[in-house]
Image: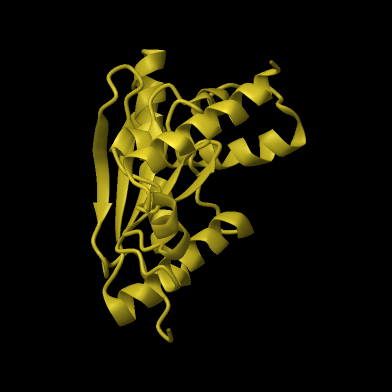
Length: 211
């Protein structure tokens, strides 16, 4: 059996198990999606949102990319954010990074990863530049990487707050709250590192006054 055929076979077994446990399981999923959460996470295969939070399909709306970035020119992440906030009416947006992130480690090097990855990782290098004074004091590479993971999550939460999508929802509906978390691969525990309540003042430069 080819590797991809194993996946298809496991899918059939999983679906059959779900139906045996709850005959109406898929019928409910097909007709209802009311998640309270948007999860912006890393593409790393070791950090599956539903599994590490103990939630079922339909409970978390998910977007994933390398190093869980929120980039203001990324139509993909912005379209997910728009849909989650304005149509699904989520109450919380979570940016979840993880310790040991390959994207963070790569951004700390001076290696040429060729145009596309260089462009993507540059956003993480910008986070380092903003927090250089703190990070340069750390001589241990693992400590530095872990702290950059946390600071990157913090900056992505700020990036969310800078969007008109979030600010409009804050002004008119007092939601969603924003959360920055980091998942530990070594122990499976999620560490909250940063929060912004709906309506938080950020910086006049980024705030819209005619929403």
